[in-house]
Length: 180
Image 1 (spheres, helix red, strand yellow):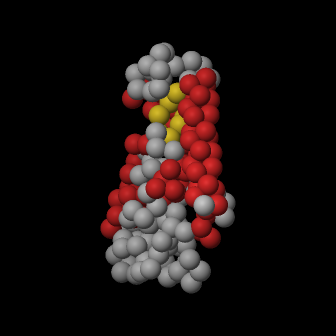
Image 2 (cartoon, one colour; image 1 turned 45 degrees about the vertical axis):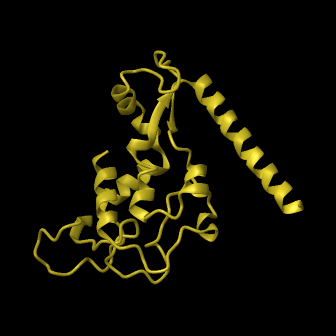
């Protein structure tokens, strides 16, 4: 969880590359993958592909050894690796988020059952559809701990079905407007 906060803070220190926009070619793997403005081919050696800051010896974000130059062979901070893994598979945070929620389902306020699941408060497809023009560091917060909740499986299924129905109605409305 500390790595999540540190990676987002380091990304906030970096300026997003000029002209970068979270666009369709970048999400070939799906909108569940966080945006990656610093991962472009030809990225500067010694710069982290997640946050854009210099990477020093042993994957540190600070030059504790006084070498004065980033490690030209490194492309990830240790914290950014941990944060990236967390963003891609947040299920490991279930116990921590459940403790913060006092072991209550975020949707029904009933006691969490054994099969409770991690869910994003703001669905990632909505981030892609409505919020993708926000600054990169702000976008990362939708993958972080602040956007996660633990919900019971039946409530999660109902929420997912409602989201799918809403997306389907948006697509149908778009088809009607295109046909008109």
